[in-house]
Image (cartoon, rainbow, N blue to C red; front, side, top):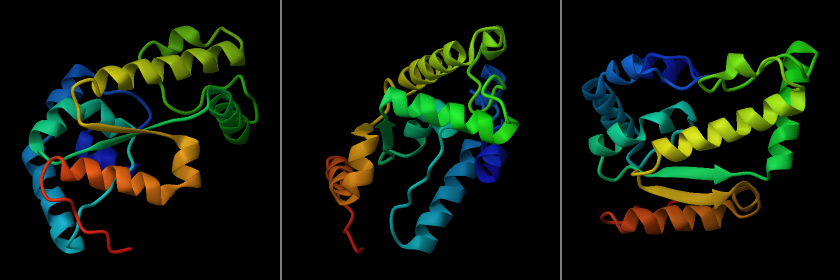
Length: 169
């Protein structure tokens, strides 16, 4: 949350507006990425749903930038969102989680209708944002069951962009 909200200039719970997309200080973010990779002495991995919406510009910033797109069983995702709502607000009718553009218009539907729309809008928005990015797609279950195999895929994809990073762990 905090890091991405600060560097991207918008909350991590919704897609950026066009003005917010244009206000990112890409030079400063590039310096931050450089400092992180120098400190780690290795490639770094970030987990951010919101950063995906900046994929086109971010890809231009770093030629060896990959996005790992995980896809999850829709029923499991829906259940997770409904549990989040219940846990945060005590009610599945209360909106929680990512707020795609137009979310407020969906507040009058049933919880199930809202979640189905929310999931579709999130996927559609991210698909559009990642359309021209370098992406490794993986199923969520595969990531959980075989993280080493997913790391192998990422290493191979990075190798196609230049020297593959050495696996140390």
